[in-house]
Length: 228
Image (cartoon, rainbow, N blue to C red; front, side, top):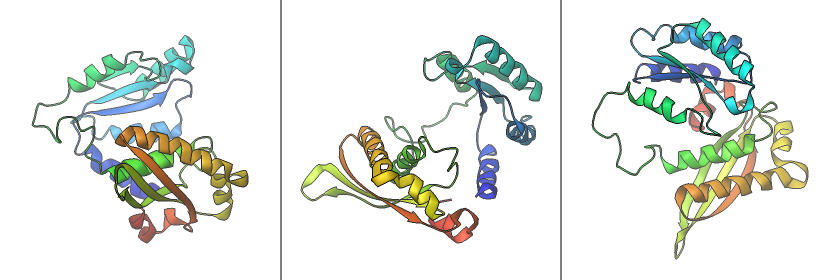
């Protein structure tokens, strides 16, 4: 999975007009960040790279200053900026910096659409995010989600039935996702259903199952089936 994702990232770099490299203000720059920066140096001459220090709402001023210094020392960024999506600090400024580097052109998808990703992909990602909440350290990359079915209920155009599967690699991970007496899985369903309803603008019935798909991260066939 890691190799596949790295390939996707490198392919994406060749297609974009600007890159934002983000590090959190409350966490020191690490070896993983340095690895990514070394990769970015190969494209920085033709694609502007912005250094973004995020989550400033979680850090003290001296931490933010330290992170800005660390980031600036890694490479020569087109811009380095701190911001926070939670309290809105410099979000508009960051947007202006990004937009200023985008070429004018025809819309990529109709006005009013937020993305060209299929709804099934967005729904699967919302479920995955809810499933990872609180267990990212235990299951950082071990959860995948597939949508088996997503159809309007008979006679109810305002009601959607969604049947989804949460894939893990081992039985111990399945227990973590389900939780004691199924409490975690119910919470995952409640949280993700609320977000899906907000995204699609209709009521949703969400049916979730957890399946052990053994070693899916190391199986090319399973990676393809799971959308990677």
